[in-house]
Structures are given as C-alpha cells and as structure tokens.
Length: 332
Image (cartoon, rainbow, N blue to C red):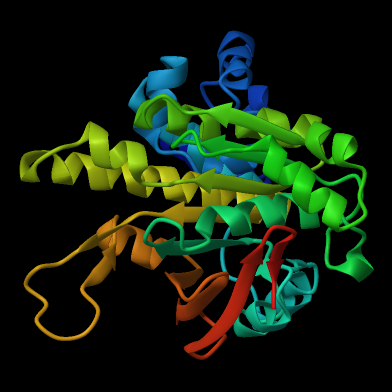
C-alpha cells in the first residue's frame, strides 16, 4: 500500500507541476521576513536573485546556503532561463541604443556611438581624454534620440574615484550644445567612492537609483584606482581580481537588465620587460580585458588632438581615429 501511495504521489507531481513563483515569498525557504531582508538589500526581483550566488544571499539574508540554492533555482525556473533562438536575440538587440560621443570619427570607430547593454572601457595615460569623454557622454545622453542622446529626461550615475568630477566642465559642455546647464547638472547623480569596497557598494545599490530615476548611463571614473591602492603586492593580487571580477559583472547585469550604457575609465602602467613597441598596458589584467565589450586605448597627440584605438569589440574591426578635446567638449 505504501509503495502504491508513493507511486500515486509521484504521478500527481508529474501531472500537477509545482506552481511557479510570482513574488519573493513564493520562493522555497523565503518567508515574509526573509523577503523583506532581501528587498532591503536591493534584491527586489527574480532577475537579481537568479544572478546571485548562494553565499551572497546567505550573507545578506542569513537563510543558509542550501536554502539560498533552492531560492536561486526557483527564481531561475520562474524566469525560464535557458536556450533561445538567435532570431529572438536579434529582435531583442533592436532595443539597443547609442550615445553619440561628439566626434563622428570616434562614433564610427565603435559602431555608431557608445552602446547600451554593454561596457565600454577607455584606458590610457593621464590627460588622454578618458574623463573628458565621460563628461561628454553625461551631457549627450540628455539630448533627444535624433541628436545622439537617449532622451531629454535621461539621467546619469557618476561614480568618482579620483576626485576628478568637475561640474564646471559639465556646464561648459552643456552651454556649447545649447542645453540648459542647470537641468543637465540636476540629472547627474554623483557619488565619491572612498575605497574599493565603497565603490562596489555604490554599484550594488545602484538598482534603487535606476528604478527611482530614468538612469540611462553609469560612469565609473576610474574603475581600478581604488583596487590598485587597496590591494598592494602579489599576495593580494588574487583577492583583488576576484573582487574586481564581481564588481564588473554587477555593472554588466545593470546594463542588461535596464538597457543602459556603462562607461568606465582605466589606469595604465608601463611594462619594463617590453623592449619594442608600446609598453603601456591597462590595469586589471584578463578580468577587465574579458569583461569590457568595447575596449578603447586613448593617446595624447599634439595640442587638442587625441588618438583612439579600438582594441577589442565583438562586432567592429580594430582601427584608429583622431578626435579633439576642446573647451567646448569632444569633437572631430
């Protein structure tokens, strides 16, 4: 009798599959209290839980690793994560937009402007134009779409790690474009990161800002400055790269989830063992090299001229262009 009852139970489970979760409380092991803890920590939807690690959820909500695994699995089931056909991906790619840089040559180099759902990295020595492009994008994103922006109500998150953000420069660029400088400044939300942990927290908490405001661009200037100073020596290299990897993947999740632009700048160093050619290499090693969708190397030319070289892109060939950084902003 017991065996028959077990068999009937199995058949019933097959015929009546478990109801898929619709809210956080529906996930296995997630009650009202735990769901509230997750929401306070910024885990407001299934997408973020599905992309989390069990240890991450356990640390935040104190639900245990095994329960966290079940919750993550249920969130992924609810989202029906799996394979899809390439034509469906192509259809989704039609929602991708671009922000004009101010230079048509630079736009052409990267396929028409800085792309949403992607991380664009610019690395180079000081005064090569990396931060200037970040300022220009923060202004240009607020233009109408036909002028190379993402809408006049678009807003920006700007994470400043090197104390280089200058609102006066934003005003200069806005005035040069005939825009209301006061409105442009109000649409840029700036946070000063005091160390690498604070920098990561700012990105982890960015979900709340993106939901509350029409955030279309996140600028991190620079990505590696704090990681470089907080983790010194070869013994700390492994931990630094792990944290940097987690950080850059959190940015990519925001780009994918909200269809926004991520623009990061990166410092460089010289490799003394390179005898021929340019010894300049970006900080962050393979972690950043693999994570960035578009990778640009900026070099300073004569006077206002800057040289941009596209080092890596999934769709555009390697190439170079020349642009200018003028008092009015980035231009040809």
